[in-house]
Amino acid sequence: MTGYGYIAAAIIISAVITFLLRAFPFLVFRGEHKLPDILDRLGKLLPSAVMAVLIIYCLKDVKTDIVHTGIPEIAGVIATAVSYKLKHNTFLSIILGTACCMVLMHFM
Amino acid sequence: MNREILKKAFIRSLPVLCSYIFVGTAYGIMMESAGFKWYMSLLVSEAVYTGAFQFVLITFLSSGASLITIALTAILMNSRQTFYSLAYLDEFKQMGKRKWYMVNTMTDETFAVNTTLENVSDKEERHSIMFLVAIFSKSYWLIGSVIGGILGQLIPFELKGIDFCMTALFVIIFIDRWENAKSHKPALMGLGVGVLCLFILGSSAFMLPALLITSGLLVLFCGKESEKV
Image (cartoon, rainbow over all chains, first blue to last red; front, side, top):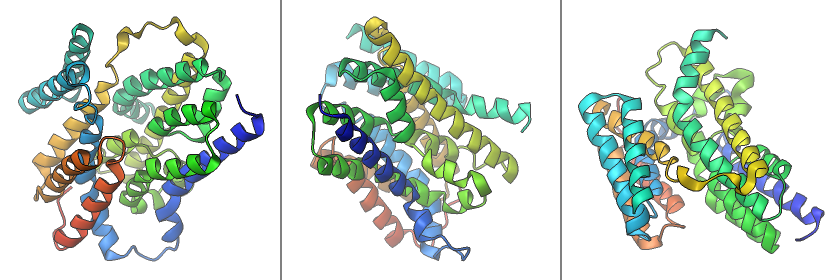
């Protein structure tokens, strides 16, 4: 284990960088003036695109371990999507999808 | 702040609860086994508050990685937060004193929950729910970190897979947005670019390039359209 000074510095650096990344757009466009048009539109279009990237991010380990994570997670996604298409009930689908994934992970 | 809003915010935060308590506990356990007590987990979770990077930071701390390495990794792993902030520039600016708390507690998960709140038409109510979801989510993460640190190895790992509920929420939000969107271009671009980047760059490095390329394409090709959100 390394010294307390090092650990403190590491935590502070991590915290400050993470904060600055989150705050970046707010620091750049600080004034009351309206956002540039292009950023305003991008802000509206981003959520759908980001959600797609996030789903892929969640499933990124499917490839590396197809049996233990791949099949359970893909089955979970299918269970979630199909049940949601049929019933449009958020909690039913989350519970169904997660249960499906957990049971398969347990047995595979 | 009335009970009705408190209840609504709590219900919205339930998927985050499943995910953060479990993953937070796993984090606390890993910190404990690397020799860091629960209050260190609590400190890092409070100060940094970003899932994946905190796990990487454990290995950095115990191996004594250079501060430059830590800084660069933090930038690479967390710059996606900049994109989330970008999408909420206007909204957070209207939230007065709560703005900086919202900015500093933005995560993949709270971003996702926020996108489901666009149909709450009363602005004040929407902002209150967003603020409460941010507070709840951070609390779940902190509680998880402490539980993991204190209970350590006592917790059986039969809950493996419970954090899938967050993936499920992302899938549901994706379907919802898809059904309500005038144009499917943004969703398809995200999907296409994401898969391509994953296969070309591998699982540890694809996220940021995928977001950058998708944003670039959105600016180039969806300029005139304003999607119904």
